[in-house]
Length: 102
Image 1 (cartoon, rainbow, N blue to C red):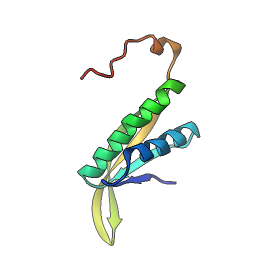
Image 2: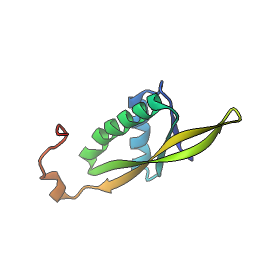
Image 3: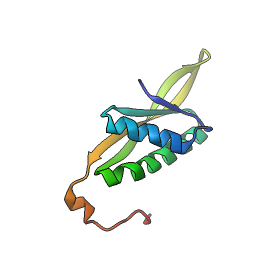
Image 4: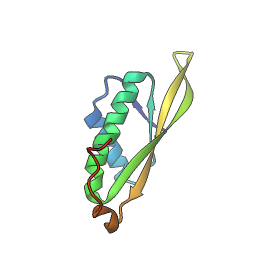
């Protein structure tokens, strides 16, 4: 699969489950979003997926990139979020929880 397509109506929890499953299977994850609502749902999904994965010793991050795509013969600009996987070391688990800081 080239990328997961996320819309403004996508369920963040469902997308998060797909992300976590792909990460666990060792599959590269890319999310494609068109519009602010879709980007919002994708970012929520990544945050939820982090919560699923961190207890297993895996963390994820993402990087955005613009992508030109065709929808119904019309050129549109999408945002692709590439998801990067990080293995957590035992040292990192002793660090204070900073999830509530800005």
